[in-house]
Length: 169
Length: 169
Image: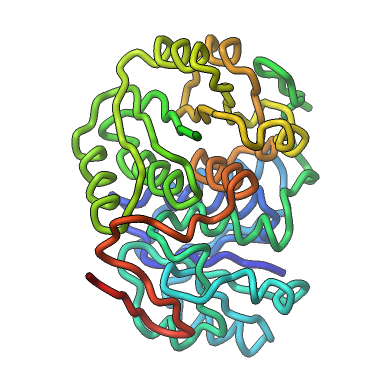
């Protein structure tokens, strides 16, 4: 099981970035996203609506206390992977992480120093400034690949050379 | 040469997503980003400041008329790659695109239908809704990999197991 934990959400500033984190987590094979920081019903609803239309399973939830959440997951046997531009190259750890239960953590602007200590792995998708959305995407892309099959979808794209086609049911 | 073209920027709504598109383009080896839609000096400045601090070369520019821009690039021999969830799988085209001059185009909410016609390739990084930031990241990651060496940097991360360390010069 792979969960993505998005820390430090701010309703005003992060609405779209956090939404993209959730969509990317789902599209690249995570089992769910957990939002922390300011509780934002809009983002939770947007993500749940996507699951309803485009399929799942994909779990969307909110946790006020991310430290407690991580401690609990550790007790359950999850490894905590913190994606950060300051970490070691993710590529060298991919092999040992494959098949494990993971919580993949991304922060927003300021990451609490405690996270670096709690994480079992502080890993960089390159050491340049870029994007938590891209970090989740590339990490999961290498770990799981692009997810093709979703259950209970109402809408599905029919891939085309040009233009748009969708199947509905 | 690989340029990323970000279409339809809206100052209010897209500030952070467009900034992330630019940062990701740079970190994954594109030579520049071209912004279109509403002109946004703040985003241009943010991206140029990152180049000044973290190094380049990486070109940041604005084009009001994206159609003319694409026509000109086509005349210069660039292939136009439109990343869209409605397209064909990008993996099958990677081989033929490697080594070519490319303009990689991502839209925002509504993509002008003309783009599907002008593009030489309408390619999907999976056919599920996710993020233009992630699409650029995974496409460039496969095409170019993570860029490690930048010229003229003033700040650089020293990768670490825990915590943050930067070199300055």
